Amino acid sequence: MIIVVNGMLLLKPLPGMNNHFWAAVFVWVFLIYTRIACNISGLGNGMQLILTLRLTSICWDMYDEEERQRQGVKNTDGVPGVPRSSYDIWCYSLGILGLFTGPFFTYDEWMSSIHSTHMSKGRWHKDERFSRKEGGEGWVWKAVQGVFFVAMFGIWNKFLPLSSLKTDWFLELPFPLRMAYFVAATYNARFRFYFAWKMAEAACVAAGIARPFDVLTIDVFLLETAISPAIFTKHWNVTVVRFLDCYVRRRIPPQIPRGFHVWMVFLTSAVWHGVEPMYYVAFLNGALWVLASSSVAKMYNMLFGPLADRSPAVQSALLFAAYLATVVEMNFGGGLFSLLKFEDTLRVISSLYFYGIIAPLVCIIAHQVCKAVVPRKSPRSSSGKAS
Image 1 (cartoon, rainbow, N blue to C red):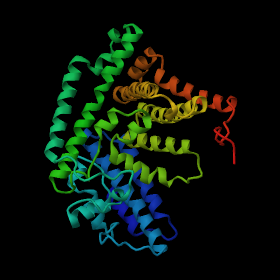
Image 2 (spheres, one colour; image 1 turned 120 degrees about the vertical axis):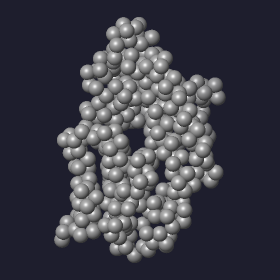
Image 3 (cartoon, rainbow, N blue to C red; image 1 turned 90 degrees about the vertical axis):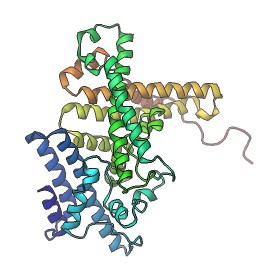
């Protein structure tokens, strides 16, 4: 039904109706309705998540295509960028590969994979922020990594089970041990996602829909060495990050402050994941940390000058401190996401004194205080006199 209604709104709009907008609204209202009214299995929920991204992307891609036509810009790739019929929408929406496994890919990427056996003509491969160098990992190596991560999940969960966070034993630990155990136990939550995404990459490459460097859902090395929440989130579930960047962030007028962009991106992600309150707490807390890390960087420059002016030893120490802070914060968010039940989560984070919520607020407030108190430095260089 969702595909039929979406196609009717897009291909046979009512006169004077903003069909693209209302088609996208219908997709998301339907998603929320099924979450509230229906008991959907995990597999069914995953399929609907991918379907929601596909149908939303069609809405805005068709809008962009009409705007380009009005401006006289022609498609020179030789590959259809948007669907032309209900049949096209059905084929793209219900394509088996990617619907069960992910990752998300746009209509023009899907069509270019059919016409030229890979996704190289898709718009994201022309964007320097998301382009990949040639080479990449073959599907066998991707699958091996997936097996490794699921094994790590099982081993880690054996010795540091996440369920133990709900027990009185955890709550009775001294605070330093409680904090250390929480960070270690919640770290395991990543491995199951690493497994799913690596297997999804392997499926796309093995089926011939993408070359090894075309499809990337997770960059484990860059993610695990991230020195800020912004870097971490950029390399987490990359195809969804690209969706949020293209269809949410870029749709917000640029004159609106950056902070609003961040909040809207994370709020959209929370709505996409589910209706449970802790999804919203977890994702909005992630937005808070992204803004807080930016505030810390600006505050450091305001008080001490550019980091590049420090000695290598000081730079290394500060970057390592930033890395540890990122790990602790991201694991706090992982705990919120994994525990999910409100009562259990509240017991755990209250035993940790709400550090993951209070700390970013303190950073943001401190930055605002510094802006008000610390005098601005002159943009003119202090070395030498003006000639």
